[in-house]
Length: 515
Image (tube, rainbow, N blue to C red):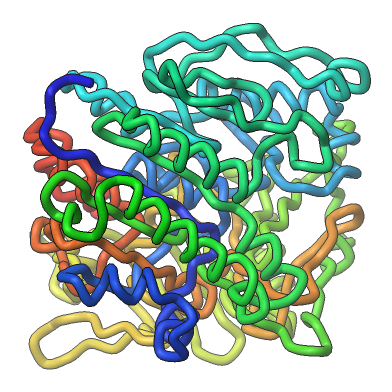
């Protein structure tokens, strides 16, 4: 350790919903989370990004950046800079079409070291001489080299990853990487039945062992995926019965091992956050729009073949959002025909696309149209959002559930912080056409499954209002809006807790307002 007097632990619980947490606390089902709040901590809703989907959102948590900056556009996108498909979902048919070895290498290496365009918290802290550990988090890029072992079943069936990988000082990646302080026992079961060690239980056991050995470095990040997995099948309420109550029990044991509740705010700070929430579909499941069928008039590229001579579009569903990439970004006629087709569909809530000058256009079938961009000093028709961003707009704010009050402030409701999040979702040069789903719907294409229990990805609050819980030592007042934290604020909270005063930690992140 580098001599810091306090340790900070960031626990990311996939699909941790603020409404579910509040409800379960009220029912006395989460006693340790309740105690965390009662003993000087805080529970807030936390705005996700757009699209509100795990690879992009977890990347925003660990970089403090939006997709426009960090380059991870979703779970499934066309990477124009590399002219290839980026797929990080769990549909085996798509992975096979991509090539299983390419899929493995993309997940194991390219995601962190080729596609990622922003520094992780691990790199930022290492520059300050602060040691960190990463336990089962998919974003781990850092400056320290670690040995990696590809499990036998994957070696035989798919291929072998390179033998080393770069990460923070301490790194645990399922059965692949076991690089922890001396005295911490190995936990991972290398079998596929245990998700190759990427499970809540392995994450919890590793964190508990680090605590028992008094081996937690100044910063530790741990990831718990199963709440989201269960939510997709059962809905988040039933998922919480299993995953959140189990997480709560782990939290109580973890705190006791580290010296008890009196250590919070003194020698230990905790940040617990979700990357997004989920909409719950109910017994009938979602209304599914097969986007490839809806756009059958346009020649479509496929994952396996890539662009063929006559192909016009590539479709990338991201659960309750989908990105349609025109092959020719300058073909305004093609773009408009695609938009007109999409906006007429019952399952589609919003169609969002980008002009040549960066202005975003939102079109709906029932609430009109809206154009917006960051305001300049010469703009008259402007509104200021809850984070101090100033926006020029033309058209109907109702497209994103906003209104303008007498003070010129944008008031949002069912779509939290919509303009910043949409602006932050468009990576420079990519120019997809995004669609969002109505609350009873989800998007698919052939070979991509949908989810009967719950889903996410859209701009709507039901998908995107995650929860953040902090212990008493975490100062929310350092944020642009302490009452409305965003997942892009988590890096700032962790840096501040550790006394980091580097320029990156002092800067209030407003990436959407950049040019």
